[in-house]
Length: 254
Ligand SMILES: [Zn+2]
Image (cartoon, rainbow, N blue to C red; front, top):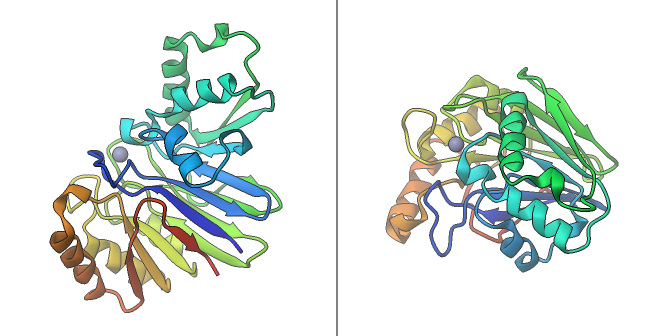
């Protein structure tokens, strides 16, 4: 059964219980890490995911809360004895910036470093990003402050699908990504430039016709009462299930 493990659910300012938003998608023997904020080296083992079992990482955009953990993760994979290739996916802007960041660490001089392959995908709606025997992943540009990709994952064994908005204002691209999907994981950092409120996320979920909405990338420091009210504001605008994503929550797609 396909699963999405929430490794972090917080906004750009994390707290003890809400790391930066990053996800691990799993179906059969296949896995995909989406983003590398905070410190995946600590969160992956805590979620029962062996660091060097990761073969593919998709980066949604080049903001520190989504990518700053990448140099450390790549280095620690090497220190843990990795020899197998690692595949990195992202928009051109995202991967160009990531390569520049890694160059600052002089990573090409690290001895016996394992092969890393960069896969830049175009800034076009529903671009096929990767396919294996577990899932198919598509990306679309969404509306944030820098080039940013939202994603749709089709789970081939479970015959289910899920979409993740990433950081974005409400936009038709997310409706398209989530159209006919079983669930949508949508950011709820708050209404403003490049972001959405929980109510706006609910409106998108409603338009897309999904059954379940998971709110993510919210300010965990706000406290339970505020977060409960945030989820309730989404429930008022969407008739499906509304959940607050939490760190280490395992979302079953079935
Ligand atoms: Zn961002």
